[in-house]
Image 1 (cartoon, rainbow, N blue to C red):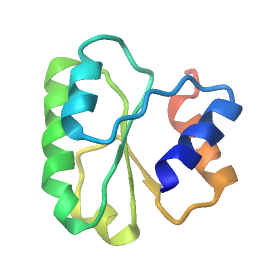
Image 2 (spheres, rainbow, N blue to C red; image 1 turned 90 degrees about the vertical axis):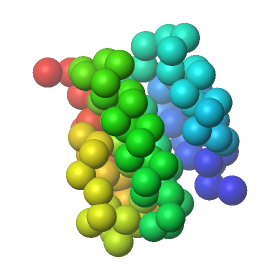
Image 3 (tube, rainbow, N blue to C red; image 1 turned 180 degrees about the vertical axis):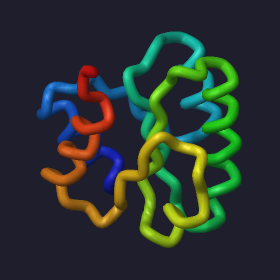
Length: 106
């Protein structure tokens, strides 16, 4: 339920967003275009292995790809794959600020 809201908030903040419900859909899209940031929503502890596998696959294909997990604090402590972790406790302003911090130009 939060996915469409997060997508809309990012769009209203000036970001182009492609959003997918399944890992397979996301994986397929990844090969079709370059992304500034790939956000992987990790649902619960059971989602960690699948998210880490996708992260490793994306890294192998494009080592420079920025990747962040959107997850709760417990899941965040269980993984070290992504560049960043955006906390799931949903605060729209913090969410957008987190994305801005990750993709800021160097």
